[in-house]
Image (cartoon, rainbow, N blue to C red):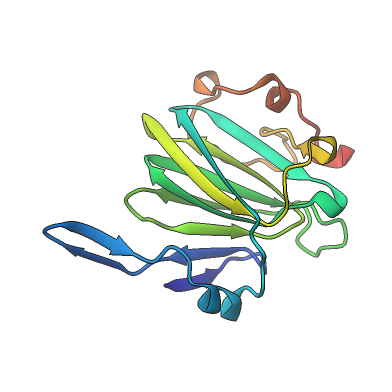
Length: 178
């Protein structure tokens, strides 16, 4: 596996080594000692999976305080445009974001540490998205940033009229309101 640190320290793209032959492929998706060598110790406690269709935008979600979550994300089927926004008030990269394409073709993973809002947009007909978290979901600590906050100016690759959003995501907070 190759670990690539992004422009925001602590946010990583992980590219697996893929072994293919006539039977298909094999790859390691998680190797604790290598993960800890680059990222450090993270105790994942829950795995989540979602299935969505083209244009579904989920996010930008986060958990506050002690309920904050680090996430290790990947796509099993299809492709997504994935985004992590730094919402750590004391961070020199506060309000900055990283984007990456995660797909069944590139098999990349994306590590997002605690203190970030996260979201993804499905760019294929359908996507199966899976991720590990290091803290259980706590609805009372949930928050969301508005996906089209002008201060963030995220370049979502699907036109506004084709987006499918929950009411919660459509009416989320602006960064300046955090």
